[in-house]
Structure formats: structure tokens, C-alpha cells
Length: 127
Image (cartoon, rainbow, N blue to C red; front, side, top):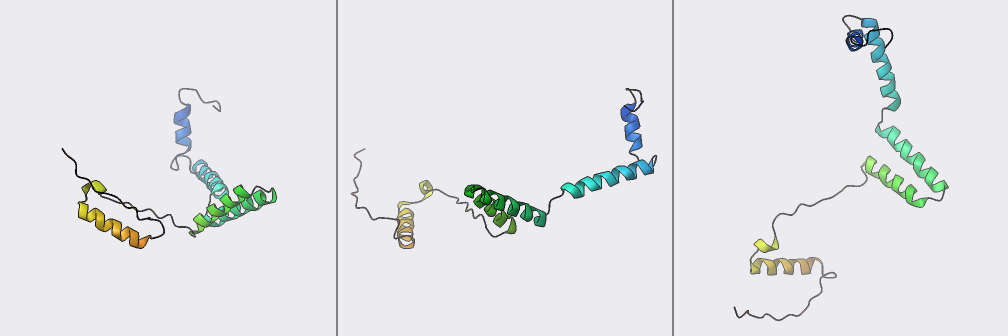
């Protein structure tokens, strides 16, 4: 390593990065890190431009699936889509028979096209 003994190379490297001991070297290292950060830093504008470019490129190649995915990613990044998740607590096992029947009535009224009324017979077990 640059002519330093192998046993002390790490120590010398550490000292070279010290702003108190070698301020010019430490400042230059900071400058280089800042340039790399600016070059590869992402922000919303850069991200949106990149996704737009990918979308257009995919579309020109007739790869519509990739184009749609890029557009969806742009929309999510812009906040146009909201992932809605509902966490339901409780279970039908914890509900009484009356609560289950009431819940079914409510669901039938809310979603009449989905829930089909099926006739059934109630039997008592002989146990």
C-alpha cells in the first residue's frame, strides 16, 4: 500500500483521513465523496425521468408489459396509487350465531350481486 509497511498501513490510512492531522487530504476525500453522491443520488425528478425513459423505450420495442409496469411505478412514485390494506381483527369463531347472521345480512345488503341466497336446512345433532 503506497510504500507503507503492511502492519501499519491501516493506521496510516486512518490518520490520513483525520481532518486535524491532514486537513487537505480529509477535505479532498470529502469532495470526492460528495461528487459521487451527487452523480448517483436519486430524487423524485430523476426517478420519474428514468421511469419515463424506460417506459418509452419498452413501448418502442413493443414490450407493452414492461411499459405498463414502468408507468405504474411512475404513478406509485408520484403518489397516484394508494395501497389500501385493511387489517381485520376477530374471527367468525368468536362470534355468536346471532352476530354471524347479522353480519351475513349486512353483507348481503352491501353486495347483493356477489352473495347468492342458498336455501339450507338446519339439523340438530344427535350427540
